[in-house]
Image (cartoon, rainbow over all chains, first blue to last red; front, side, top):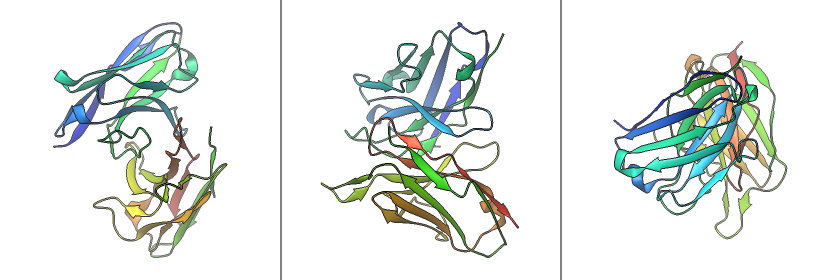
Length: 122
Length: 113
Protein backbone atom coordinates (compact mmCIF):
# COMPACT_ATOMS: atom_id res chain seq x y z
CA UNK A 1 0.00 0.00 0.00
CA UNK A 2 1.26 3.47 -0.90
CA UNK A 3 1.42 5.45 2.32
CA UNK A 4 3.21 7.94 4.52
CA UNK A 5 3.25 7.53 8.31
CA UNK A 6 4.38 10.33 10.60
CA UNK A 7 5.62 9.87 14.16
CA UNK A 8 7.52 11.72 16.86
CA UNK A 9 4.98 14.30 17.94
CA UNK A 10 4.18 15.07 21.53
CA UNK A 11 4.11 17.67 24.27
CA UNK A 12 7.18 19.86 24.64
CA UNK A 13 7.94 23.05 26.55
CA UNK A 14 8.71 26.31 24.77
CA UNK A 15 12.36 26.34 23.79
CA UNK A 16 12.47 22.56 23.56
CA UNK A 17 13.17 20.21 20.66
CA UNK A 18 11.45 17.38 18.83
CA UNK A 19 12.32 15.24 15.84
CA UNK A 20 9.51 14.13 13.57
CA UNK A 21 9.77 11.18 11.20
CA UNK A 22 7.86 10.32 8.05
CA UNK A 23 8.11 6.70 6.92
CA UNK A 24 7.23 6.00 3.30
CA UNK A 25 6.14 2.69 1.80
CA UNK A 26 4.68 1.34 -1.40
CA UNK A 27 6.51 3.67 -3.77
CA UNK A 28 10.04 4.64 -4.78
CA UNK A 29 10.67 7.15 -2.00
CA UNK A 30 14.15 8.08 -3.20
CA UNK A 31 12.77 9.56 -6.41
CA UNK A 32 10.46 12.15 -4.89
CA UNK A 33 10.57 15.64 -3.45
CA UNK A 34 9.03 15.57 0.02
CA UNK A 35 7.37 18.25 2.13
CA UNK A 36 6.18 19.08 5.63
CA UNK A 37 2.90 20.98 6.05
CA UNK A 38 1.40 21.97 9.39
CA UNK A 39 -2.06 22.84 10.63
CA UNK A 40 -2.69 24.69 13.86
CA UNK A 41 -5.79 23.58 15.78
CA UNK A 42 -8.90 24.70 13.89
CA UNK A 43 -6.83 26.58 11.32
CA UNK A 44 -5.67 26.17 7.73
CA UNK A 45 -2.73 24.52 6.03
CA UNK A 46 0.73 26.08 6.09
CA UNK A 47 3.74 24.78 4.20
CA UNK A 48 6.82 24.32 6.38
CA UNK A 49 9.68 22.81 4.40
CA UNK A 50 10.71 20.67 1.44
CA UNK A 51 13.64 18.51 0.41
CA UNK A 52 14.68 17.15 -2.96
CA UNK A 53 15.06 13.48 -3.75
CA UNK A 54 18.80 13.45 -3.01
CA UNK A 55 18.60 15.50 0.17
CA UNK A 56 20.89 18.14 -1.36
CA UNK A 57 18.35 20.93 -1.73
CA UNK A 58 16.09 22.24 1.04
CA UNK A 59 13.78 25.17 1.58
CA UNK A 60 11.94 26.55 4.60
CA UNK A 61 9.10 28.86 5.51
CA UNK A 62 10.40 32.12 7.02
CA UNK A 63 8.62 31.28 10.29
CA UNK A 64 10.82 28.21 10.90
CA UNK A 65 14.06 29.15 9.12
CA UNK A 66 17.04 28.71 11.40
CA UNK A 67 15.08 26.59 13.89
CA UNK A 68 13.90 23.58 11.83
CA UNK A 69 16.02 21.23 9.73
CA UNK A 70 14.63 18.83 7.15
CA UNK A 71 16.55 15.73 6.12
CA UNK A 72 16.01 12.29 4.66
CA UNK A 73 17.52 8.81 4.65
CA UNK A 74 16.62 7.14 1.36
CA UNK A 75 18.04 3.82 2.55
CA UNK A 76 15.41 3.85 5.31
CA UNK A 77 12.65 5.42 3.19
CA UNK A 78 12.28 8.07 5.86
CA UNK A 79 12.19 11.86 6.05
CA UNK A 80 12.81 13.86 9.20
CA UNK A 81 12.07 17.26 10.65
CA UNK A 82 14.31 18.37 13.49
CA UNK A 83 12.53 21.14 15.38
CA UNK A 84 14.53 23.27 17.81
CA UNK A 85 13.70 26.38 19.84
CA UNK A 86 10.04 25.48 19.65
CA UNK A 87 7.43 28.18 20.21
CA UNK A 88 3.80 28.02 21.29
CA UNK A 89 2.82 29.04 17.75
CA UNK A 90 4.48 25.88 16.36
CA UNK A 91 1.65 23.84 17.89
CA UNK A 92 -0.33 21.81 15.39
CA UNK A 93 -0.61 18.68 13.33
CA UNK A 94 2.42 18.12 11.12
CA UNK A 95 1.78 16.30 7.86
CA UNK A 96 4.32 14.92 5.46
CA UNK A 97 3.36 15.10 1.81
CA UNK A 98 4.76 13.86 -1.46
CA UNK A 99 5.70 16.23 -4.25
CA UNK A 100 7.17 15.71 -7.68
CA UNK A 101 8.91 12.54 -8.80
CA UNK A 102 11.23 14.44 -11.09
CA UNK A 103 13.32 17.58 -10.86
CA UNK A 104 10.68 20.25 -10.39
CA UNK A 105 10.31 21.56 -6.84
CA UNK A 106 7.12 23.41 -7.79
CA UNK A 107 4.46 20.71 -7.74
CA UNK A 108 1.21 19.68 -6.11
CA UNK A 109 1.04 17.27 -3.14
CA UNK A 110 -0.54 14.02 -4.22
CA UNK A 111 -0.04 11.86 -1.12
CA UNK A 112 -0.38 12.88 2.53
CA UNK A 113 0.23 11.12 5.81
CA UNK A 114 -2.27 11.22 8.67
CA UNK A 115 -0.15 13.64 10.64
CA UNK A 116 1.44 13.82 14.07
CA UNK A 117 0.41 16.31 16.74
CA UNK A 118 2.98 18.66 18.23
CA UNK A 119 1.96 20.64 21.29
CA UNK A 120 4.24 23.36 22.60
CA UNK A 121 3.11 24.45 26.02
CA UNK A 122 4.44 25.08 29.50
CA UNK B 1 4.53 35.43 -1.01
CA UNK B 2 1.44 34.80 -3.11
CA UNK B 3 -1.71 35.20 -1.03
CA UNK B 4 -4.65 32.92 -1.85
CA UNK B 5 -8.12 34.13 -0.87
CA UNK B 6 -11.14 31.85 -1.03
CA UNK B 7 -14.79 32.80 -1.05
CA UNK B 8 -17.06 32.16 0.63
CA UNK B 9 -15.62 31.02 3.97
CA UNK B 10 -18.52 28.60 4.29
CA UNK B 11 -21.58 27.54 2.34
CA UNK B 12 -24.56 25.29 2.89
CA UNK B 13 -25.97 23.51 -0.13
CA UNK B 14 -28.87 21.09 -0.48
CA UNK B 15 -28.13 17.52 -1.46
CA UNK B 16 -27.96 17.23 -5.25
CA UNK B 17 -27.43 20.95 -5.74
CA UNK B 18 -24.32 22.72 -7.06
CA UNK B 19 -21.60 24.07 -4.80
CA UNK B 20 -19.15 26.67 -6.10
CA UNK B 21 -15.97 27.80 -4.36
CA UNK B 22 -13.82 30.65 -5.63
CA UNK B 23 -10.10 31.19 -5.18
CA UNK B 24 -8.14 34.30 -6.08
CA UNK B 25 -4.37 34.77 -6.05
CA UNK B 26 -2.49 38.04 -5.60
CA UNK B 27 -0.45 37.30 -8.71
CA UNK B 28 -0.85 35.09 -11.73
CA UNK B 29 0.01 31.41 -11.25
CA UNK B 30 0.02 30.75 -15.01
CA UNK B 31 3.47 29.67 -16.16
CA UNK B 32 3.72 31.00 -19.71
CA UNK B 33 6.39 28.55 -20.92
CA UNK B 34 4.11 25.53 -20.50
CA UNK B 35 0.71 27.29 -20.32
CA UNK B 36 -0.10 25.59 -17.03
CA UNK B 37 -1.80 27.08 -14.02
CA UNK B 38 0.05 25.98 -10.88
CA UNK B 39 -3.14 25.63 -8.85
CA UNK B 40 -4.48 22.69 -6.89
CA UNK B 41 -7.58 21.92 -4.85
CA UNK B 42 -7.69 19.73 -1.74
CA UNK B 43 -10.51 18.26 0.33
CA UNK B 44 -10.14 17.75 4.07
CA UNK B 45 -12.76 15.84 6.00
CA UNK B 46 -12.91 16.10 9.80
CA UNK B 47 -10.08 14.22 11.47
CA UNK B 48 -8.46 13.31 8.15
CA UNK B 49 -5.49 14.61 6.18
CA UNK B 50 -6.03 16.68 3.04
CA UNK B 51 -6.71 14.81 -0.18
CA UNK B 52 -5.74 16.08 -3.63
CA UNK B 53 -8.78 16.60 -5.88
CA UNK B 54 -7.59 18.79 -8.75
CA UNK B 55 -4.19 19.86 -10.09
CA UNK B 56 -3.11 22.16 -12.93
CA UNK B 57 -6.35 24.00 -12.09
CA UNK B 58 -8.58 21.56 -13.96
CA UNK B 59 -7.08 18.05 -14.02
CA UNK B 60 -8.96 15.65 -11.80
CA UNK B 61 -6.83 13.31 -9.68
CA UNK B 62 -7.33 9.61 -10.34
CA UNK B 63 -10.32 8.23 -8.44
CA UNK B 64 -11.95 11.60 -7.81
CA UNK B 65 -15.63 11.60 -8.81
CA UNK B 66 -16.44 13.57 -11.94
CA UNK B 67 -18.88 15.78 -10.04
CA UNK B 68 -15.76 17.69 -8.96
CA UNK B 69 -14.37 20.08 -11.54
CA UNK B 70 -11.90 22.93 -11.57
CA UNK B 71 -11.70 25.94 -13.84
CA UNK B 72 -10.06 29.32 -14.20
CA UNK B 73 -6.73 30.79 -15.23
CA UNK B 74 -4.24 33.42 -14.13
CA UNK B 75 -5.52 34.71 -10.81
CA UNK B 76 -9.13 33.50 -10.61
CA UNK B 77 -10.18 29.91 -10.10
CA UNK B 78 -13.28 27.91 -9.24
CA UNK B 79 -13.99 24.50 -7.76
CA UNK B 80 -17.44 23.19 -8.60
CA UNK B 81 -19.25 20.25 -7.08
CA UNK B 82 -22.02 19.65 -9.59
CA UNK B 83 -24.33 17.60 -7.38
CA UNK B 84 -23.47 17.70 -3.69
CA UNK B 85 -23.40 14.36 -1.90
CA UNK B 86 -23.38 13.78 1.86
CA UNK B 87 -19.80 12.52 1.71
CA UNK B 88 -18.65 15.86 0.24
CA UNK B 89 -19.05 17.64 3.59
CA UNK B 90 -15.52 18.92 4.19
CA UNK B 91 -13.24 21.91 4.10
CA UNK B 92 -11.80 22.68 0.68
CA UNK B 93 -8.48 24.45 0.11
CA UNK B 94 -6.90 25.91 -2.98
CA UNK B 95 -3.10 25.98 -3.23
CA UNK B 96 -0.66 27.68 -5.52
CA UNK B 97 2.60 25.88 -6.27
CA UNK B 98 3.84 28.48 -8.76
CA UNK B 99 6.39 29.91 -6.39
CA UNK B 100 8.08 29.25 -3.06
CA UNK B 101 6.60 29.18 -0.52
CA UNK B 102 3.60 27.23 -1.79
CA UNK B 103 0.57 28.82 -0.16
CA UNK B 104 -2.98 27.75 0.62
CA UNK B 105 -6.27 29.59 0.79
CA UNK B 106 -7.91 29.87 4.20
CA UNK B 107 -10.38 27.10 3.40
CA UNK B 108 -14.09 26.91 2.58
CA UNK B 109 -16.35 24.77 4.73
CA UNK B 110 -19.09 22.99 2.79
CA UNK B 111 -22.13 21.75 4.69
CA UNK B 112 -25.52 20.28 3.87
CA UNK B 113 -28.48 22.66 4.00
